[in-house]
Every structure is written in structure tokens, then in C-alpha cells.
Amino acid sequence: AAPINASLVENYYNQIKDEIMNSEYLLIGIGEEMNFNFSNKLCDNIELIPFMKYIELMNADKSIYYKMYQNLSKLLNNKNYFIVSICNDGLIDQIKEIDKENVVKPCGGFEKLHCKNNCKNTLIDINQVEIPLINKLSKNQEVNLQDIPRCSVCNKPLVFNQVNQPGYDESEYLEDWN
Image (cartoon, rainbow, N blue to C red; front, side, top):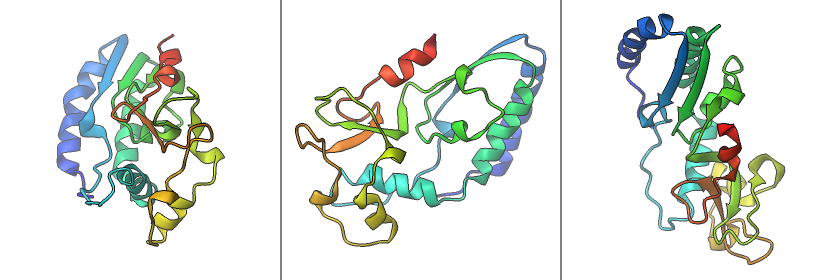
């Protein structure tokens, strides 16, 4: 992945700092510019690409992203805020100073899987299941279609619960609006 421009981050930070400091209530939108910058690796099977991105995200140096969110958390200290993030990388969740109850991510992420058919209408926590495909991809081993995790009901592929995936289940984020 291409590194994010640190001077651009610094300029952006300084631009919003004064506005935040002078505000009592904050509604913050975090757009794609804060999303992890995935590489554009090509793959013969489009169903494998999200899993490849997951491996890339898990293995990448994310320090610049953590620094951005930590800087934001410092600005939000003792403020009433709500954050709407369209980033699907889940990195904001790693910052303990940002109250997760004040964050909504309507585009989903890499934390949950669901059936491509949405036949069970069930979300599966990625950390609660063993996925041999992820192990093979992380070790650069050969993979095939049978390695893609499957729904236990209809045998269709499981996909990450992201807005751009078929059967996206928005129930996970809807409760965060309350």
C-alpha cells in the first residue's frame, strides 16, 4: 500500500483543530481519505480480493492511521461528539480514547462475515471462526474456491459485512444510531 502523505495529514489536522476547540457539540464525518490505503493487487477470483485486503490490513504498518485517530481523540477530549465513519478498515475501533458508543460505521468492515445470500440473516464474528483461507493467504499458499468460507445453511460464500457486498446486513450499525 502506498504510504499516506504525512504533511497532508498535518495540514488537515491544523485546519480543523481551531474549529473543534471552539465547538461545544461535534458531528464528525470521517471519509475515505482516512481509510487504510489498500494496494490494488489483482486476483483471478473476485471473491478472494476482500480476504486478501483483510490479510494486508492485518499485516500492514498502521501507525500513521493510529496517530491520526489519536490526534482526533485528543481534540475530542471533554467534548460532546458523534462520529459517522465510512471507513471499513476498523482502525478507529483500536483507539481506546474514542468512545465506541459515539461512533457509527454504516459501511461495515472486516469484523463480521455474512452469507452472500443473507439466508440466515446472521453475522459471524471473524474472530470466532477459523478460516483456513486466511491462514493460506497469509502464508502465500495456493488457494482455490473451496477455501472460501461457506454458509452452513445454503453453502454460498461468506463475505465481509460491507456495504459493497451482496446481502449486506445493516443491523450491526443501525443500533449504533440510538
